[in-house]
Amino acid sequence: MKSKIKREIVEFKILLRSIPATVVTLFVVSVVCMNLLANKTLLQLDWIALDGGILISWLSFMCMDIITKHFGPKASNQISLLAAWINLLTCLIFFIASIIPSAAADYTAFDGIFGGTWFILLGSTIAFLVSAVINNTMNWMIGRSFKKNPDGKLAFAMRAYISTFIGQFLDNLIFSGIVFMFFAPIFWDGFHWTFIQCAMCALTGAVAELIMEIAFSPIGYRIMRKWQAESVGTDYLNYIEEVKAK
Image (cartoon, rainbow, N blue to C red; front, side, top):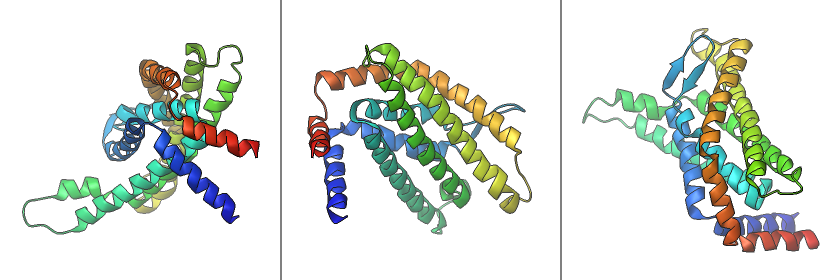
């Protein structure tokens, strides 16, 4: 057991050294920003509700798609878990800042946004981690079905579009279910959403996210091809092969 844990730690350290820092940074920042931007509703109709997180959530899924394609789903899951922990730490720092009194000015709006609500953070964290694992696993499985040209544009597009749509749908559904069906009736004076409302908002939100993914996935494809041409992450990929061979 100890040797397995040590191997996993060594593997994760090699992974962090292997993935270009820019992609990891953008991924983590996008996860943190999603949590903040979700505080503002951009559109709310009877059949659709979109919050500010949609403006950057495509970046999170694009980073996961690139990492999954080049390093595998396990690596992408590990980076997703890292991003979730950093987001929780960031939220803790924001919360501490929000409860520290200050007479310099009226910081009510600041405290309201950055202080956050614990069950919203809980719901978003659970939804993100579950959808990330499903997205990464589906992305990898779809990619394995392309035998002739697994590195082509069609293969990358199908991996990204299908996994993103399903991942985003589950992300939205789990989040809205936890927050608006379970906790909201308790803490928000009976306010709640029905399952149909949660499902419809999850579906329309996933469609909107898919449109963003379609628009920006060519950037992800070019990054992936550049990584392949430059043999990015050779140390990690070689280490994984060595472990499998033992």
